[in-house]
Image 1 (cartoon, rainbow, N blue to C red):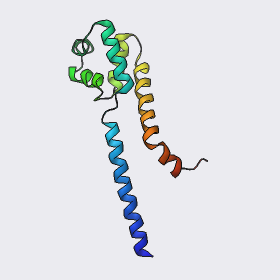
Image 2 (cartoon, rainbow, N blue to C red; image 1 turned 90 degrees about the horizontal axis):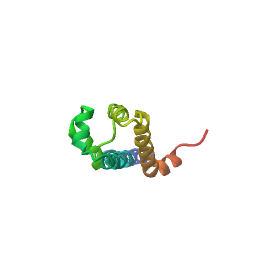
Image 3 (spheres, rainbow, N blue to C red; image 1 turned 135 degrees about the vertical axis):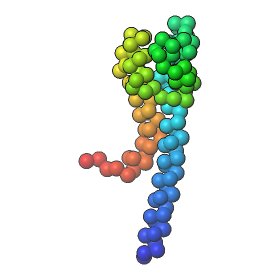
Image 4 (tube, helix red, strand yellow; image 1 turned 120 degrees about the vertical axis):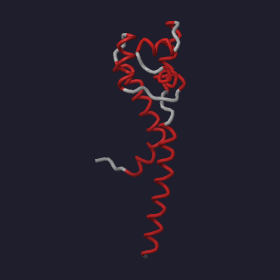
Length: 119
């Protein structure tokens, strides 16, 4: 019986390690909708990511990474974008959070539904 409990515990650790790898994999490229929206806005204004970065006083690779989908929009960047573009920081954060939630639901929703019961 004790050996069986050990095997079960070991299996849970292996499952958690795989799950953590999948989570870190989708967290690594979470720009999604916010990056596409920023790219469209830049194109409409005839700006490059570098030109906008200079106006926002942020490193140019920050905006380039967001547009390419390699980086999520941070709170500070959202505030700067909102100020310059006149949309408000909440607009950019809503795009980012909605995208992140959709990814989490797709990746973890079924597992969470099985593990957590409704109160």
